[in-house]
Length: 268
Picture 1: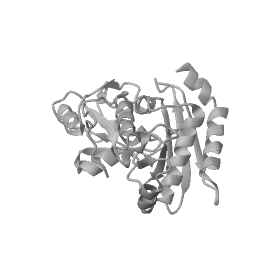
Picture 2: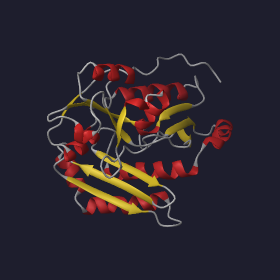
Picture 3: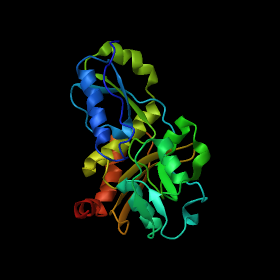
Picture 4: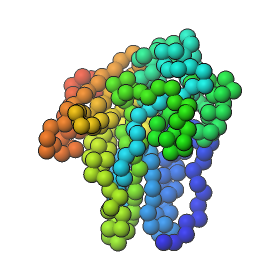
């Protein structure tokens, strides 16, 4: 594999800003230029439709996809004081939080996770909403005060999953990475991303989609909300045995559309 010579992701880019897209494009350009042979992305940051010169060759076993509330002082969402300030720039997270707590205020905290946690401990915000997977990987779960269930805070499509890209037609690299591909994770994120694509959403659209699977229940959750959280449509579609991911996604999308999701997105 050839050495790559390009900058790493700007840790000061605020969450949800196009810096993520710029970083993804930078890595993909290195892949196209054959400076690297594979690229590992946070899957929720990858475009729903990849450029034709790339293939998503592996989706490894997924980490915890949930969003979490972290706080230095308060034990959960209901314990935050009135008019509490929460650090997040994600419209998806803001809208769902406002549906639960209309008094909340939001600010963007720049910097990596450690920097945001420090700013929180200094009192700049009363809480942060972050992805559980990131805190797990950094060994910082001691800050977590609440794990949000998908019917309260539906995660972003692909959250908690990694996506490994290689150049289309690079069969040698694809074959070498095949063992990393987890069938359940790929099924889940494919269904989630197809709902997002069908609704015409992007990373900053207030759309959450999450396929939850355990021994008892397999269900695709989806939510579309107005930015202020006053209007919201939801779908919770059980998986049917033998169903393909695109079929499950189509059923969830139809429920959302029939409930006015596209009008809600257009109005926002």
